[in-house]
Every structure is written in C-alpha cells, then in structure tokens.
Image 1 (cartoon, rainbow, N blue to C red):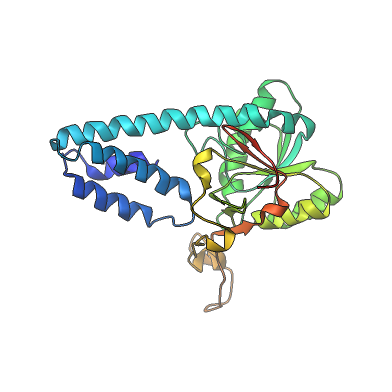
Image 2 (spheres, rainbow, N blue to C red):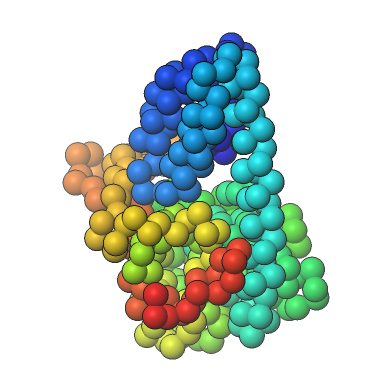
Length: 278
C-alpha cells in the first residue's frame, strides 16, 4: 500500500528524484510504529536511486515495476505464513485474534489469519474468537466481516471478554499480527495485544505472532525503543459524532502496545518459525 500510495501521490506527471524522496519521507511520518510502511518506501527510494539520472518517465516506470514486485512478494509471503502456521492451528483450532491481520490488511490472505484460512480450506474445524478491538473496532468492522465472507466459523466479543473465554475453555490459544518486531523479539501491535499475551501466559495457552520478515526490525534493539503513535481523544470519548464520555475528560489513547518477547510462544514468518530464545 505504501509503494502504491507513493506512486498515486505523484499523479500522472513525471517527477525528479528529489520530489520522490520528499514525498516518501512525508509518507514515512504517517505511521511511525509500523515498520513495513517505511521498509517499502525505503525500497522504493533505492529503486529511485537507480534511475536518478534518467528522465522522469523512466523513473516512474521503474517505481511502478518495483511496487508491483513488492505486491507480488507480499502475496507469496502471506501464503508461506499460512503454510508455516498450519501445524499450530491444527493443534489449537479455537483461536482468539485481535485487530485485523487478514486479507483486508495486506496483499494476500493475511498474516495472523493466513494459517486460519489454510486450515479452513483443508477442512480443519477452526473457530476464531474475534476481539472487537477498541477503540476503532477493527476486529468488529474488518476481521468479523472477512471471516464471515470466507465462511470461517467465528464469534465476536469485546476485548474485556477474552479472559472469560479462556477461563471457560472456549479457546486454545491466540494468534495476532505485528507492526514491528524488535531485535530482541518484543512485538509492537495494536493496542490490546499485550492484554491477550498476559492472559495467555496466565491460562497457559500459546500466544503466536504471524508476520512477514519485513516486520522484523534488527535496527531496533528492544520494545522500549519503538515509537508508539498516540491517537486523538475523540476515538475514545465518542463514536460517529456522538459523545459518550464527559466533555474535557483526560484520555490516554496509544494506538499500539509492546508485548515482551518472553510472552511470545513463536513467531510465524514467511521464512519459517522463530522460537525462543529470540
């Protein structure tokens, strides 16, 4: 999406390298926590460097080809994640997931949902418990929607119901995506992911993270080094223009949290499984 977004933002006109660089750096600032966006844009800039002395039309053609390559690689990575994670889903078919890490989030069949889709297509009786994912409800709006369309059995619940689902034996484990994984294995993902990881540890359930290798960030030593995006208070205090909290109330609304690597059972990637020690 970042690669295509860069091209779309350039419009129909041919542009010099410096314009491409400026617009890529602008896009990088939009999501500081998620490393995949900056990874794709840096790859586009490396491509642009190769055409630095060419005419603008050649530069744009090269960028379009690079964006298509990134897209195709992402599709293949999702498929590989699905195959790599299949044994875990076969062993733990009733899984809770958080936010959206499916086909609506990436180019292919998803990251966290990829093994679920592969298992479902093979006739394995999977059942996904979907956290609604407050405050923007990506689980309710996106994950529940796409699982329903795919015919995957699923149950929607509020985030605060995960402990109840685990304590009553309704789920066998959790599988989530990731926005950035530090060199020590700490995982930045949608706010509320840490809650699930802590609950899984308490109830002795596996906690899996699924992502392409482009999410692994060796340049970030640990979770404490990951910049966490802060969101607007209105996302918490109201919905659709309707306020449900007192006017002027103080709000804490980080978009992501960091799960320590010690709580992660395994990281499922397109190049295989990464297990502790990270």
